[in-house]
Image (cartoon, rainbow, N blue to C red):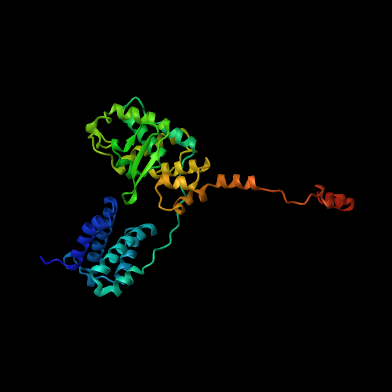
Length: 341
């Protein structure tokens, strides 16, 4: 079967360009692949073009916009998801500009498609009391309970993304003072995060129980399931949900209805901010490229704003007699009293 130019360039884009030249993470490549699977399905269902016949000549700006509208109307995608799909397509056509410059004008028209503005969700985080209640829920008399407490505590203490926690191995942990964990974030960028001494107590006991200090276990998953495989994102989310549901039954006020693994990351950032930690240090802890990404926590912390305003308040009101001028007017006062009858 003859291969189309679209198939040739897409294969090279996903395998050679993203993985080799750009060193994108497997998760990013997987997300881009899913976007193109949807695009190929769209071309078949809506344009009657089978994948075997799908060529670059079939694709233009209008087709891409139709695809983006289709995923929103038929797949019920949000504006944010639409923008993620557009990002994948933009990356592909940025690559295509250099591989197929003959249709440069068409590719640049596709690259000119704007993202849709979307309402940013409020940061969902727990108070220190909420975190404490959550950590009290795992059953420490069971092996899984001890693992779950260690997992949740480390996620919070390190401010790690769920994928960063999943990818941890014993070699990523150093429990000698000062204790640290080495996390690999977006773009495979590594960062060193200090750990609190209180956290290392859970972690050390867990690693000893599971023989994770042994040299042969150096590259084992730090957190694994019953089959000794590393946990999935869904698995970690389930663990959090189970314990959050238990905590909510005890005190629904301090445990939000909607809670995700990212909520623990948000919670750590907010608690550091409220403790007076500089945004630069919080940025480094979270692995943000720019402090502007971290600035969202400062904007969200209404309590800190109120306290700052109260401390900065200066009474500039004129020093006047608290007795209202009309109260000195006996005739007016008598008239007002008569209004009550």
